[in-house]
Length: 281
Image (tube, rainbow, N blue to C red; front, side, top):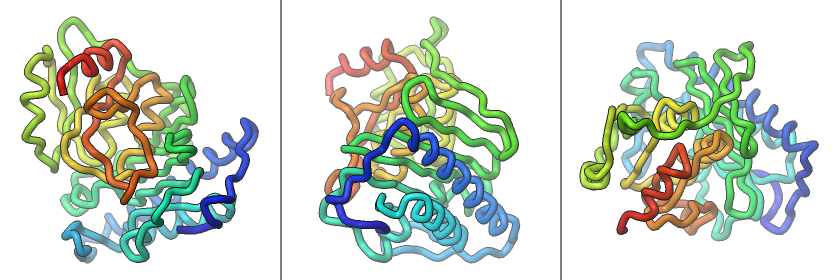
């Protein structure tokens, strides 16, 4: 963690939230550049953490870039980041406001060189992600948002910020975004009652981007994740008009003990969300 303790809540106004989003976007692009330098090396080393998940120098360089930028912009807001948490541990209690960072989400996809990995930066306030940046370095696409109606996509660092929004499900059936690397035994059973037009495999948090842009309608997840895997994607999706729910239909919250997530349902529309919530758990 960086910054001061849980009690030091920094007032955020509508004036400085856009500033923090601008800082987070720039940090994500800088981290992406560091990641792609490593990606271009055909012989980059792959280590493994205690949980057997892969780790590369790209994860570490990207984290350093992001945390330095966030702390410089507002040193009173603490940051919780995947690699630092792995090395130093997690706080016993979440601060009321904090950054959640996954500097390289989808390291397995990075190692496979399929391009489906992301940089995730989110700002959490009172257990909700209120600002998020999701960037796919190999695809050169950034998604961002800081509240309903503010979601944008940027193609390349110099590209225009294009508004994005979720869509209503088509009568032809829904498009489902699903994990490429993590099989969910319950997924087929969950989707059985739905009319499915297409199931699209994607790595990392890119699935949130597919729903946020209306390229997919639903992203169900049954396997475990960590909060830094989902916070940025949730912030972007909610800004685009979607929602992220627990399987029982309750809101998906942050700052949980151990920062571990249960399964969730990411929906593109309220209509689809209601149909999910009405299903038995």
